[in-house]
Image (cartoon, rainbow, N blue to C red):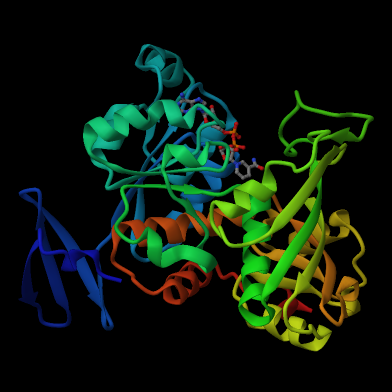
Length: 385
Ligand code: NAD
């Protein structure tokens, strides 16, 4: 986990009385790092462009990592989230520098423009709304910076769609990566795991999607079940193929009046016969697959979020797929189950791994996933009940 080992860095070692300190000369500027144990900690400088639902979570997850630091976050207007950034100590950069006075009048110090922030970063996490992110690509290209986008952008914006459990190695050293959406992340994790063990011949998945995030007051529906879209397949199936191109999958989706989580009803057919016991074993071994055991007596997203809150998870985030043990039905070559996906959370840990892969310091997906999870004190939910 040492991106200082890149040959373009000149590294000198200084033996101190109690510890070994390391000075890297990067782009002719000295950067100090500390050595703890066997690891040279060479902090990756991360900028978060778009400090909203996903951006603020990624910022906190990055800040928790030993090998990364947040060098800035961006906002378009002063609001509550900007005050949270200030409280966390994240330098605040703004999209429209002519609004600097308005930020400062509100008591929010402005560190500079988004371009200033990007210049100071090794890598930019673009957390701006869907389709806005793509408009930032020319800036990242002009500055020669690495950048990663979210699932609201098309695959083509980066030319590579990422999921840590499926294709971490292929992201190593890339300049541009797109982390797939919350639903696609949840689908990829479980499909890939079942495919490796049983060989998946076809997946049929129905997504019951939350209408809006809890903080979004302008979205609905308030009283309807909206087919999203009416036509089959929904975009989720093709999106899974951007990560797992060999999988045969059909998806359907609808939106319902809830804010907490999505629910997936999944049916797979497999080459080899499936057993419920083995499926549970595989879920338990996976660092990002959660199992809601019968003993928890949870039958809804509401009870699940309540559990996450009571467990003291930050923002009551569920970073793992939440697969309902009792729903797992295995019969010969057929596997069915329900899984709940916390839309605001599951992609956050994937962003952290994507940063590590792109910076090239950690070549092993399992080690990155373990480091990300450990820094967040994230152990999958079945280990809490
Ligand atoms: P959001 O609206 O909550 O946050 C976006 C932030 O970007 C806001 O703070 C906004 O002020 C800021 N912003 C807008 N235009 C900007 C600009 N030009 N420059 C800088 N900042 C700007 O959006 P979100 O829900 O966090 O979604 C971000 C991305 O993540 C989208 O691609 C979305 O599809 C994806 N995503 C969202 C979720 C979810 O459930 N919210 C889940 C997975 C992926």
